Length: 258
Image 1 (tube, rainbow, N blue to C red):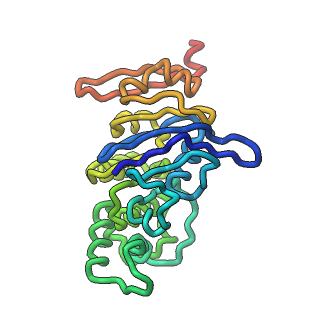
Image 2: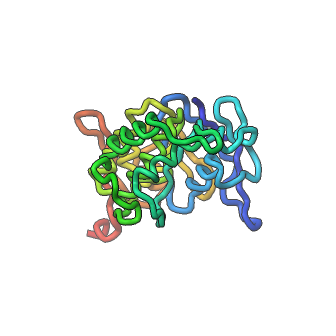
C-alpha cells in the first residue's frame, strides 16, 4: 500500500509549522524522514496518522484520501508507534496489546481465540512474552515501547508509521525492533533521529529542515558530510565499510580546535 502526502501544510496560531510537503512511501518500502529537532518531522507524521488535520494539502492511502476514511477504516490500514510518552495504563501487558485488535471488531464483539493467539505471537516478536501477567505501568520506558509496538503489530496493517520510536531503547532493542519492522514486508514511514540507524534500515530518505522538505534520495545520496552540515550544522565523516554499510562519525567543536 502507498502512503503519500501531497503539498501538506500545517499552520498553528498563525505560524507555519510545515509548508508544502510532499512525499511517497511505496509498497513494502522502508522510508525515513530525517532532520533536526523542530524541522517538522513529527508534525508531518501526525497529519498522516490523523492526530493533526492539515491546514492545506492531503494525505492518501493508495488512491483514497485519508479524510474520506473513517477512523476505523484508516486503523485497519495504518498502525502507529509514536515517540514514547508516559502511559498510565493500569492493565496487564497482554490487555494493552489486545487493544490493537479493536479496529477489526464490530461493536460489542468479544475477543476470540484467534485474537489471543495474535497477541501471543506479537509479544514473542518483540521479546516481551515472558512479561505476560505484569502490569504495563510497572515496566521500564523501553519495555513499554516494545509492548506498544506489539499492540501496533496486532492491527495487522499493510502500513506502519514510526515516530522516533527507539529513543528510549538500548541498542540491542533498537536493532531488534527495527529488524522486526524490516522483516514485516509492509510499507513503513519512519521519523528517525539516529542517522546511522537510518542508513542501516531505510530504502529511501526524505530530509526536512525548518518545516521544508530539502532533499530526497537513497541513503547514500542523502547521508553525506555536506548534507549533514547543511541540515544539522555539525561536521562529520561518512564512510562505507566492507559490507557496503554507511557509517557516520561526528566531530564535536572542542575536537576541531585541537
